[in-house]
Image (cartoon, rainbow, N blue to C red):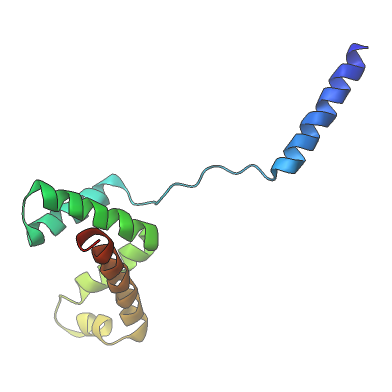
Length: 121
C-alpha cells in the first residue's frame, strides 16, 4: 500500500515537473559588478553635477544601460574609447578600425536610450 502511494506521488511529481518546463536558475538582471557601477555613477556625477538628483539620474542611466548592453560589450567599448585617447600608431589602430567603431556606436546608442529614459522621461 505504501509503495503504491510513493509510486503514485512520484508519477504526479514527474508530471508536474514536465508541465512546468525546464528548471532554470534565475538570470541576473544584469552582470555589471559593483565597482563598475560605482565608477560609472561617479563619472556621470562629475560630468553632470554632484547633487542627489543627479546621483539618482546617473544610477537610473546605468541601470538602463546595463539592461541594454551586456557588461562584456560595455568593457570592450570602454576600452576602445580609452585607447583612442592615446597617441601614436597603437591609438590610430583603435581610431580607424570599423570593428571598434561599431563597438563604440553600440555603447553610444545604449547611452542615448538610457539618457532618454532617465533624464527626459
